[in-house]
Length: 134
Image 1 (cartoon, rainbow, N blue to C red):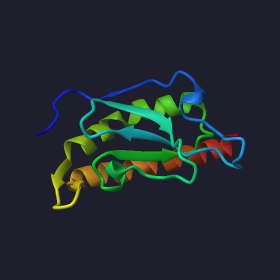
Image 2: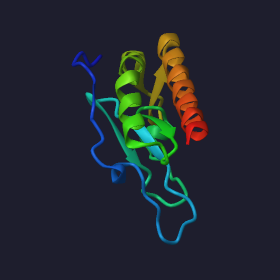
Image 3: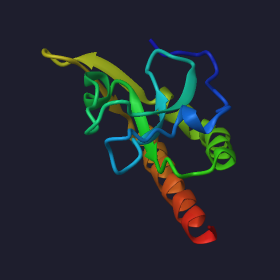
Image 4: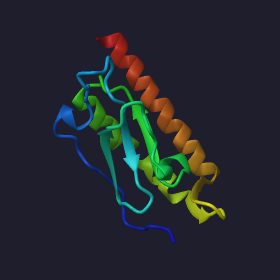
């Protein structure tokens, strides 16, 4: 069943919502936009697991994550989240979750895959712009 409730973006209020560096680690934890397949909100957070473990729901494509540099400024992250919202909507609309005999797995139709690829490209461009504008 397709979720018809409009998708929203949860505004990030503090950098600590997506930027974490454990004292025992050299690098920040990975930051990402996340869309849970049954949710109506895209939010930003960080990977709390050292070593980057991935939940089954993400591994099997049921839930979606788009990673970005945790060094991006707060304003840029919020701007990206708002600008990417129509593409997040296309991904959600084209996401099908089915039982494959072993797991609930998600697959994207052609339009959703194009939107997913475009999201990744836009994030990459934003990271590069930030890198060279700093």
